[in-house]
Image (cartoon, rainbow, N blue to C red):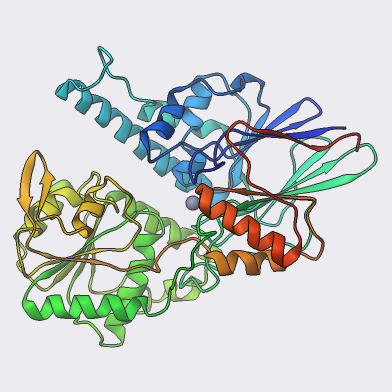
Length: 466
Ligand SMILES: [Zn+2]
């Protein structure tokens, strides 16, 4: 038996995670992600998939983030009909995220048509909400740490990755004619001291490792997050202003709620109302309650006072009118809204009303890529274009790091240290070139591992005649 891998994304870049395993004529795709970020990458989403999707037998998903799952609707439109294996919590999250992504695609296409900036006569979305819903019947839930048979020779086991709810490290065990081989896909790995999720499981054996390297060249200081957050909120409150936090709906919002609850419990910030103004964040928070056995907040979710998602100062706003009513508030409140990079969504009307007010604060809690409104605000631009208007920026703009859901360089190396035997190959994936290369060097120097930073569309023979 021969085993080959082809990198169809997530190579030399963080997004577009998709790796094709060819196992004696059986084609298994690990992750089916969308490219995000720079235009040259995003254009790959529009190209035909490098192999005929109808020839792919099954998809395995590490987790629900769009850069790992968001290509599925198009993949199915192009002919894929097989099962998509993922953990139960990932299944619920993927449904929410794909439909939302379809909605955004439709809105963007409509906007492009109105503005006339598209080269196409009638700009089309990459996929619609309806396309997203066509993914649902193919989704096959699996349990953590339970071996699942993909076919007579291939089994799959999911282990906790601690990155977002339901995120898994996948072990693909392949029985050859003479030998067995274990292929380990780290997916995105979480942090060792996450306030909500459990740390990534240790994996002692693997013949081939596909390791994420998002923070391969960086440390990410998670200490004092609550102190730094508390200080800004306190100062804003004393000025009579409102703290506005643009936040991603999955993971980040729930972590913020945890910190804010703890700060209020300890009396470190005033007991002012906290508004979660994002229907998607509300739906995702519900899933944290439903899958309480997947994280270590479990028992506290039973008690109202101790539950960071359900305490007396917390208000969930689902309706559009309720969201707009928050613009009337003049002080004594914290507002959390999406999107985290202020690229779209309800956060725009909040920024429109808050930025001109010098008493208010805007607190970014995630990385803001080049070209986004978030980056421009952090760079100190004195106006911000929203709804076609240059809004003056008088509010205080802050950034708090350390809230990322990714293991940093030190944690990635620690996780690798748990391997008892050396993998034959370690591929560094899900990272910018510099980050992957840096981590590859460290693993080579420290453990003498055979590390490879693959290129887009590069193929490797992993095993022959096993
Ligand atoms: Zn992720």
